[in-house]
Image (cartoon, one colour):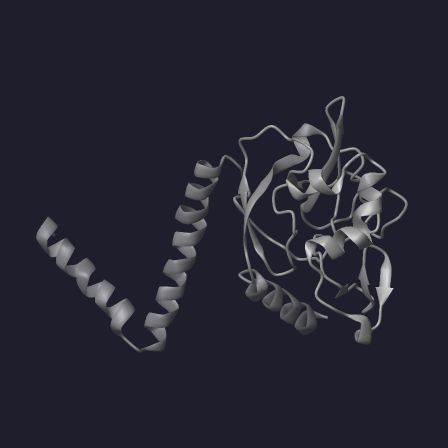
Length: 225
């Protein structure tokens, strides 16, 4: 087969995939999209962004600045519990009134925090664009691998609140306090994070884009349980 015939065959196949309404063409199209995303898009993004995880889906509310339900269905923000009647939209000033004491005790003032990247946090279901070529500093939101003792199933996305002697500490903006070996179900410690655990830092949030994956994961959990 010469080049002209090959080109003609490819065009014919392409038209069949994208113009046909047959079930088989849909299956082939989905398979091709998977191949492109898995083996071209993500490796290209990894190379461009300098990290093995260029896009991270947010699967918890630990960085949310609003009053949201926790895993037990309780409405809370920074350890304060609310009723449905008291739930309201929280702007940055109100967030600081409710959550700022923890930071101020550690010499992070409202003015300093207001200059941090993504100062208003982000929500469960958002997708985060991750940059890998950076030097960590206080205020950065980093994606990091949990400690070896942790049972956390995936990397964590929290904000740096302290760096001392090369050891990083983080905290979720929504959380009352830092995660330590003794105060969370997953046995995760964010008070002693080393450079080799850091995957990258959050630079842009894309709202809601991660919800399809969350819905699919929760659906399969129900089916398989």
